[in-house]
Length: 239
Length: 110
Image 1 (cartoon, rainbow over the protein chains, first blue to last red):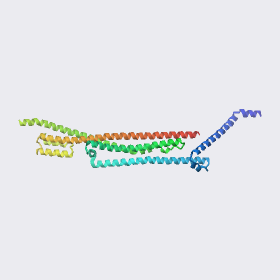
Image 2: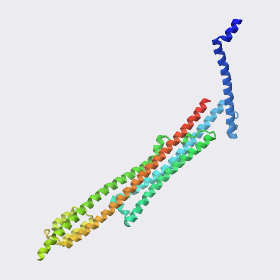
Image 3: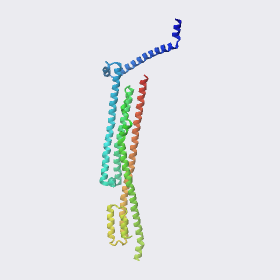
Image 4: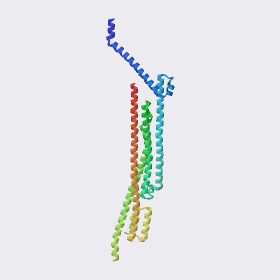
């Protein structure tokens, strides 16, 4: 008997089997109580109609329903956010497509020099203001597209923060991945490439004009020399 | 300078169509013999035509340079704004991922 008690009280084998079991039991109870409390808290936070919807369900069914609701919410928000951004950039794309066609048509019709010259109709000052106006229109359209998109992203982020503060699911749907970002920035890139092509053509034209001016100035110089050489000859002939 | 020499140099300097036509008319009026030396009055007329053409080219060149500078500004602006938008998206993405992973870890701990 004594031996049994000693064995029972002092044996490490018995201790390891017995005590962790007790600890585990209390831990499980504690955990269960915490989960129950959390579920109760969560139930109090959700709107009454949602509670009614899940009132007949068991614990795991409620959890499943909540997960489904969260997924649906994320999907809806993601779709809405992406469509909004896409719509804005589609509009920008249309604008730059039309602008590019207009410039291309004008160039075909008039040639690059006369396209530039068409802005110089009322002298260089009006040309400056004309070109500035076109450039400003481009810039305004482009910048407003981007500012709108950025504001939309910022708004989404603020909304997400508020939702988190309320303990609601984080709307991952607002996130644009790299591919979406590239697609969104494509019209900007197109506009930039069009502007670069335009600048390249203008640089080539400017180079041509500089050469032409130089040639003509050389001819003027030759004529001036011919004139000064002919003066002594004419004077001699007169004598 | 002989008429034929003047015709040659005028013809080779990329004058605009109208200016070239006018210059050739002036040289034709200077005499029938191509070996004839052109007088100062003719030279003055030719120089005036060239000066007008040079001024027109300078105007075009100025307009070209102006447009190049403006386009440069536009390209820079677009690049900067696109970069800012990209940065903001990346920052937002990172913040949301960070917060989401915090939430996930909190739930996993429980």
